Amino acid sequence: MKNTDATTLAKPLTKKVDFSNYLSLFMKSYGTSGIVGAVVVAVVVPVLFSSILIGKKKGKKRGVPIEVGGEAGYAMRNARMPELAQFPWEGATTIAALFEQCCEKYSRNPCLGTKKVIKKDVVTASDGRRFEKLHLGDYEWQTYGQVYQRACHFASGLVNFGHNVVTRVAIFSETRAEWQIAFQIFQVIVAAINKRKMELPAVGSSLSFKEDDKK
Image (tube, rainbow, N blue to C red):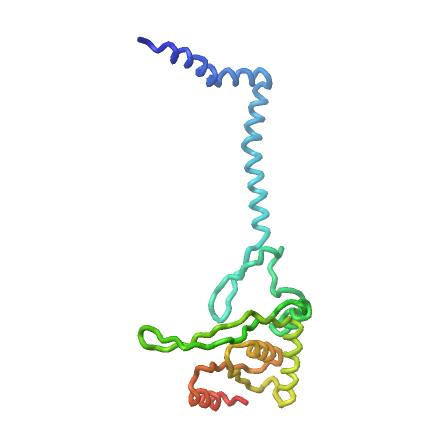
């Protein structure tokens, strides 16, 4: 038995897919010049648009090659900046100037956060080693203005002791807020800095101080 339904359905589909009728109607309506114009527009417009985009991308430099410490590198441009920036903003040419401007601009914002030690426990590991476990409280924040004021007081004390740009200074402290404040001040007074960890043995620390001739 023949499938007459399939043949009857196929006839209108072939008529719908016949593009020659559409082409002939388009030629009658617009002529050969219209077809040529449509082809030109379809080809030229995308090419022109892409060339404009490429030109814009070439105009904005993403970065420049640099050499720091004898090694070649590549400095990338910040996406928010229209051009390559050497400094974060005007006047911030050094770390000291950047710290001072940040403290002035964000004087009421939190800067340094510390936690108080509530409890200390000694934990013994499976291999017999013993570790000290600290239970800490919530963060207590100092604002940029407070940190800057403490830094200025610390710097005044160093200058009063006779420290200057040629004086060598060593930081011998645990990682805490006072350490960070002292480090920022040493950047301001341009003192030579030597960081010492509290974990060093007493003999090793004293020898290192003598070798570096620190005050």
